Image (cartoon, rainbow, N blue to C red; front, side, top):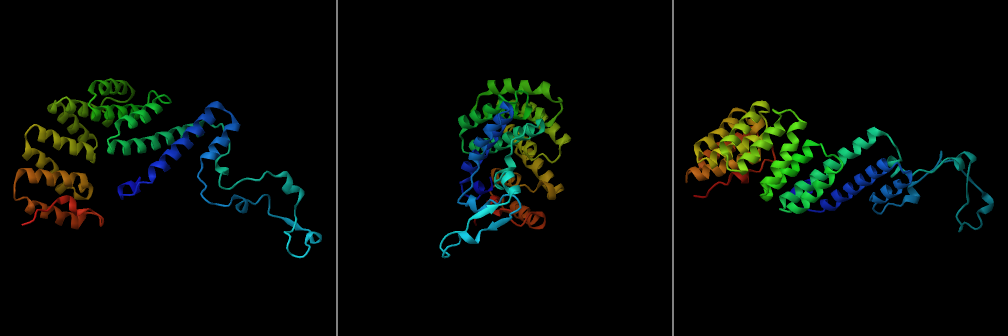
Length: 300
């Protein structure tokens, strides 16, 4: 995913190739058909490698027949030892996808499919391709109907599309699957309440999350938004300042800094002084590659 954030975008093809590989392996395990491994091998991108030159069977023992060497223009005949003829030649680039029917391996590939799918869906959502993101996410629901993370991800995508009813239906399916006071359930409730303009309930959910998981950046950001939508700009600013200044090593997150600077701009025309204090804090505690342009210093 890193090249996407650097302005280079060849990674979607790679992610889709990985997804196809995962699906092929899962189909192989579920069908228990060892012949289907060939379909998996075809998914592996080998580039311009010369497979013949990279494969060496057995122990590499070779007998050169001097009779076959005519005038030096003909390649010598390679005679393999009996042991070599009995041993199957394995391609070192594809031997890691040997057929196996281990139940644990199936679980691993199912988890890999989810992770790759979530990566692709996240990218599509950032590009406002909600329909494609939903199509991908709903595909893995067929394999894991009771996976709360998948159901929550689809529900949150529906929220971004404005389909509150569908989101609520999926969130209701999640709640019996995990503890009621878990971060996932509380986040779903908060986001659903926020989308329905019930900012008091949303604020309550996000505050509960921060008690359970104080380093949840998403909850901290959403709480500030609740204050803002309740027309409590000063509380929105204070909620972010308290986190950032009390624990800068954990809360100097670019999203929080960007939103705090935006709130400063809403609060006053003279926001540069407060932004300078943030920049000094970033210089002391922030990473070397922190993007200071998000502070949006005003000229003059």
